[in-house]
Image (cartoon, rainbow, N blue to C red; front, side):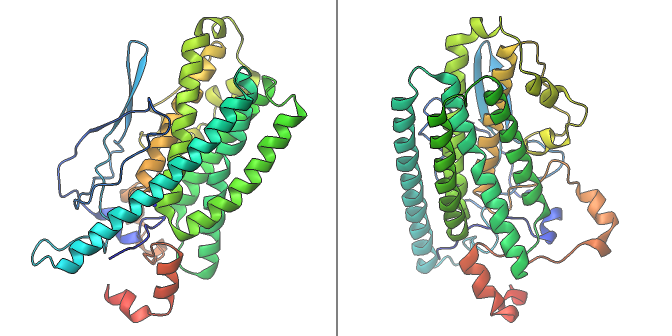
Length: 352
């Protein structure tokens, strides 16, 4: 989220790269909503993109365990040379680790502050709290899309996968919000006023953060999604028996069991399309699926923090190789500072 900012997308040439190191599985724990991911590994790892295999949800009795199988890959151009590694490279790596630590500390502080406010205002009002959370949670994704469209207008890059995934994430969060509205979470004027004004502030903050450091913006969203997962998980464990007696909202039935689930598959970048098909028999099932959606968002945000780790589940390299003439060469910028610099030095960019 030498010092460089991570990119938002995968360059066209990266569709065919091969994994150079075996995959590793690192447990990822959601029990503490403020304990977000640690700084990414600095070993030059990569992963095969097909078939889509990344993070999986496993249930052991009633405990949901989220495992991470994304080997963190160093961004192209950030790899430290194995032969003849200089002190400058070591110093640069140390500085980058320090910057990542500062970014994550700021994110955790901000998340902690918002959580304390919500805990104070919504201690015994679950649906209102969920309404506020979902109003806020969908903001980062169309903030990301706004910046990506701006960069495309500047001619820096065109990233279809990032735009598709982030739109699908906002679409998913919007349906969470519709569900909470149908459950009465927005019945009080104060709740609507608070949620909407926080969302406006959050939008501009995220746009600014994403323009300067995508890695930091994605980590902040990971913290928010982690808190959402933890909140829904506690609610399910506390109110599970009562939820099983209540009917599911109509909007939830249509979204989770509708005929066109393309966008439902799209935001789950750790899964192959069609690998998750929820059942909705009662309100308990609705909240179980919302909780699992938040886990998928968190894993996608974690993957986004490493340059080149995000790809649409519906993208296939073989299909793209069949139509090479239609592929558009894309610059490999790593944030607004790097893009501005490369826009004035096209010769250096080509050599790289």
